[in-house]
Image (cartoon, rainbow, N blue to C red):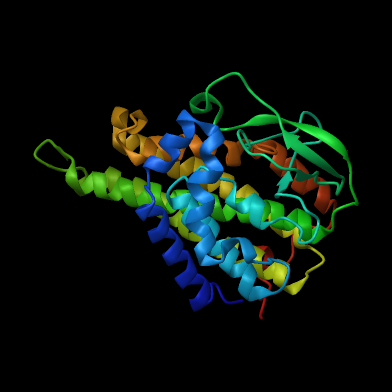
Length: 316
């Protein structure tokens, strides 16, 4: 298994990150919170010139890895647009995107988004849906609204379910990239007791723990992408295992980031505040840590995980 994305995918991700920065960077999510109906106009024209919306993630490794790189760059800026969900949309179905939802009370971070969306449950059941409304401000909901199901569609393939789980994890990985980088920079600049925070051994241990989690998630994300590319029969289990790891890594990384930042980490003057707040929908939907682990256990039964999770070598 190759743990790095292709050079072309990496380059696309870098271009996307720079394009989002030029379009406003951190201010994009601030403007979207003020008016969720503007989410599409704020982001779609930025990524369209890069060919983002022409990607077919089911066409092969190159386009899937490019999509993963785009999702990671979107996460870096807490981009207020469902990039992962749109890229996961089945081509030719006319739906705006694919969202993995819980069996009951389906919800997603689609406030202000028009069009028809395809929902898929972990058992493969699908529906077409439209975004509902929530009277609370987006600052409190993280753009999450109930979904109004219009009717059932053809059952989803294991690949569809895996894509709907893995690409949002790539977005979350991008958020952790930014959160840890911002925290390391803050620890180097902030002085306490006459020296930078980064000189204290306890802070160094915390930052190391967060980085180990982030680096581990990066490898597991590469493995889950390979699992989809290779058409492994265990693709859904691999995707769920990635999500379990991603939620644990996010818990540790954001805990460390907030502890090091202190109270200022909850103020919107710091990017950590926006990243932390808008990571919550990914971390809670369709299920939180306990629900995701239960879903993985149900899928595995008595078989256990295979591949990377047991030390078995996977190769392209």
